[in-house]
Image 1: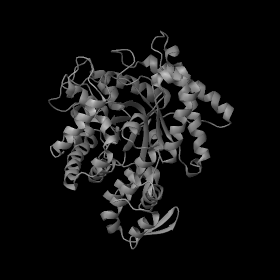
Image 2 (image 1 turned 90 degrees about the vertical axis):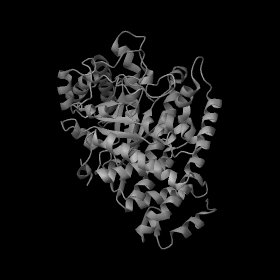
Image 3 (image 1 turned 45 degrees about the vertical axis):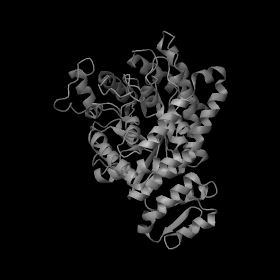
Image 4 (image 1 turned 30 degrees about the vertical axis):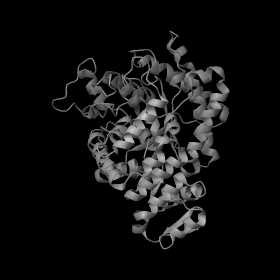
Length: 484
């Protein structure tokens, strides 16, 4: 239900939450809060224009009172640059049904004692899932409250990028658009931002510096802008340094069949460091740079699909690339390491390789993808972060408990709005484009029966726990002491 006024919402709080000020609350009954109240508050924060702002601030205040603190993973990543522990941080993109999906994340987090975890949303996902940063933050915080999570919570803006064509037409206008999104995200407590200017790499150039120059210049300018926002919002007074990443090869794109190279990384970092040094002198203070770098290693967002649109789980990741560039990133530039995108649809048995563990028994991988020499390098320089998205979307939409009639309506809507290309099977078209249903059907998905949503969570908890947390080495790994 939607309440007609802020006063109606406040009536719900009686005996459960005492509002002391705009930014302070007292929790009177934690059990009742985690019962139906938080469900109602997050619904209002998503769908009720009249009570939206009040509920979002209230959810944040409750979260902080319970010890759920939006934080930056920067301090850990600076430490991770020197650390050889076999740990790869999962960054999970929560696209649709954000509250229910995030509840599954936190249920698995509590079960496995996980603190090294990022929850993120990409610029493109903000569009098609109809979740602006403030809505996303409220949904994630509400889920953390519901499931009894405590500790630092790392929210990330993923693939905050400029469009190549738009940039060519008007660089200043495109830059201002991304700056506006960055500011909106930081206001919503996103203290991790991935600056993906790889869309601007010019692969027609032969020289690596000429290819990367626009990428590293714009990444440096936006780094400077974000550091200025830290001062504007007084985050620096609270010891918050927003954690930043860059990207040197557009995932699944660039030159066909070409993965990122050490030459790409060296050209980007040399140019980026030079630009930051110049901006630091101009600003009068040291501008802290990125702590990680995303590279192209052979994967594709959404997975590689067959003619029917089903994901091909054959491993195509070049772990040799991850090993070689990961070592360079850490040893030469002091980064936490490289970042792997487009991984959720892979065979989850290969996830252990990201963290530097040997492949499990019965799992074969060719030397073309991972040599013995590079396996050793990877064991000492694990992938810093892996981004995971599509598999969890598929778990929900393909779930046996998902109402069949609803599935048919979703499929009809997708094919009407995203027609098949020539010689493309409708099923593949549907699966390639069904990510767009999250925003269009948001309210109807939210109102699915509770037993259906519980079934989704049960399946997701298993995936997050067994496929992700276990294989990436983050079970029982505690980084909370860094933030005490």
